[in-house]
Amino acid sequence: MLYKKFNALLNTHMRTFEMVGVLMRIFSFSLVSWLGPESPFMFVWIFNTIDAVLLTWCAALRKDSAYTLLNGFWILIGIIGIARAGGFIN
Image 1 (cartoon, rainbow, N blue to C red):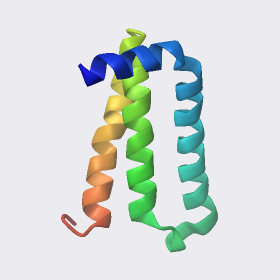
Image 2 (image 1 turned 180 degrees about the vertical axis):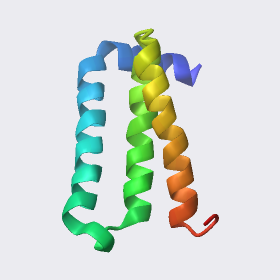
Image 3 (image 1 turned 180 degrees about the horizontal axis):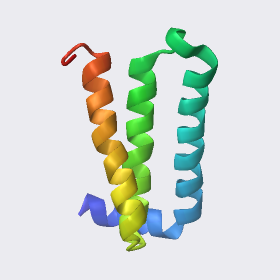
C-alpha cells in the first residue's frame, strides 16, 4: 500500500524527483573528481546508489526500459562499490 502512495507521489512530481536524482549523481561524481583519493568513498557509493534507486524507479514508472536498465545497472555497481569501500570484498 505504501509503495502505491509513493508511486503516486513520484508520478505527480516526476520531473522534480528525476532532477534531484541527476543532481545527486553529478554531486557524487564531482566530489570524487575534486577530492580524488581523499574522497569519502563510502558516502559517495551510498549516495550514488540512492540516486540510482530513485532514477530507476522513475524510469520504471515511465516504462522507459533503457533508463530502467541503465540505472538498475548503477544500483548493482553501487552495491559492489559499497561492499568494496566497506572492506567486505576486495
